[in-house]
View 1 (cartoon, rainbow, N blue to C red):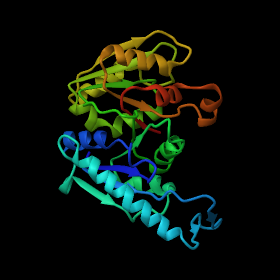
View 2 (cartoon, helix red, strand yellow):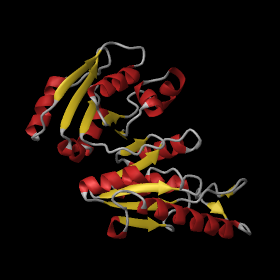
View 3 (cartoon, one colour):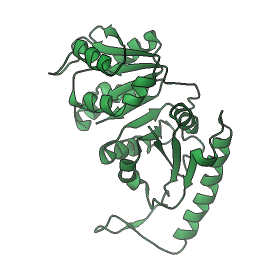
View 4 (tube, rainbow, N blue to C red):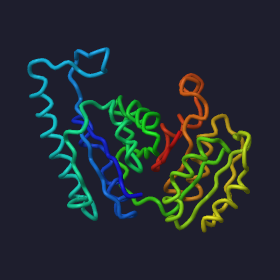
Length: 271
């Protein structure tokens, strides 16, 4: 894991998870690119053919003002991290994105994208889904104001699905660097595929020893996963995203939605 993407806008510069980005960069000797996306004022005129925004008087000046303020905040917060996130370890890119919808596209050339969960920001879930479905890379969701080390004790929420298999493969550097790895299974929350014993053998083939943690059946398996993870001292959770469709989870709930909304620790997702 060498390249980390941290998208931010004028409305998120105060709360985007800079500490988590700094922690990952320090742990894996990686570089963080903090990439600004303009938050366009309402109303805007959108070109239906290109998806771009038609400029009007004052728009460019407003975006430049956003950039100046947000960039200053990000650099200031990065320097306060321990160790400071600066120099060669931090690239601040203020010009590559013309709107937040491009975050998913640019995320294809980064090892992981970091998104902060914020009740005050109604757009964070949309940003997460853009990065998840358009990027094809893992997305790390960090709870608001999270400022603790993470990565020593990793939990894998294993339901035998292709989504979890994908995030497992993409997260192998995280797994290999952990001091403890737990395979978390919940009774009744499984799909056709290899069970936890086979996963344990697979990990051992990569030099990773792991332990089982099993949860009893639950109305929402995501809540049970979080309960088991907390009891095991897990500080970093790995989860396949949306084995059920987004629409189904929106209406009826689901493991991904519960973990997205309720996790107290960083969670890395892939679809």
